[in-house]
Amino acid sequence: MPSVNTVLGPVDSTRLGSTLMHEHVFVLSPEIEKTAAEWDEDGARALAVERLRELKRHGIDTIVDLTVIGLGRSLPRIAAIAEQVPELNVVAATGVYTYNEVPMYFHFRGPGTVLGGAEPMTELFVREIEEGIGETGIKAAILKCATDRPGVTPGVERVLRSVAQAHRRTGVPITTHTPTPPEPWGLEQQRVFREEGVDLSRVVIGHSGGTTDVAYHEALLEGGSYLGFDHFGIGTIPLADRVESVRLLCERGHADRIVLSHDAMCRCDWFPPSVAGLWKDWRWTHIPDDVVPAMREAGITDDHIRTMLVDNPRWILEGGEPY
Image (cartoon, rainbow, N blue to C red):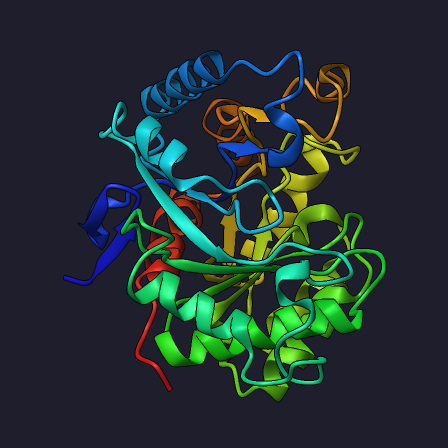
């Protein structure tokens, strides 16, 4: 059977089980966290271990941690946490998260820059997939990029194209961030990927569930991509409305193109704690505890729920051959 790389090494894809496809353990600002009076490294790690164990007790077997460059990624920290919860798989990602400019490390080098040369982002992504991230040896199993309200800026487009090129060289799948409620940036992401020759059936358009606009969903589906209903517990859309969108898409035969998640984390230093407290259901256990029962009550079948939580993530993360 195909294997999938996790933080603790490759696992048989059949062992992924119920999978949350868009989560984070931490989202941090590394240049600030060590000087912030409230930062407690040992406490943060202990909290993450507790939350991951709780998640496993609630029936989830795998999380995809989409914390890439720009979000405070630290694989040594994540590896140390994952080693204490070996019963739950943590999948690592590579990519760059920006709404506008590329990080300064890439600013002066690459096509169209002062120094020119090959695209360093593509080379970095491929290396992190094939050889490992930094000195950890942990191999990324998915590529991540983002488009937000500024749109497909030159920097964002450069990241999208680099991700597309790395995908084609490695066969590793792509997942994205889009703003909520989404502007048409999911469609623009598909346009850029299509121009790079990407098979859009190997792409997840993230945060598609940030709207109940089924016409938008079906436009993305027509392009061939998966829909990320991955903001359960956050935002202003009521749970019943989110579930109804999923139910309608399942009824129309699209359960095999949907994945589920929360985009939650143990700690995010972007906001004061009071802001996160506004959304009591923004937590890793919301889907197994509340969303799945609500789906059953709405008439979504157990087969469809398994397809969205187990089968689709497995097929996505198995990836494919380079092309």
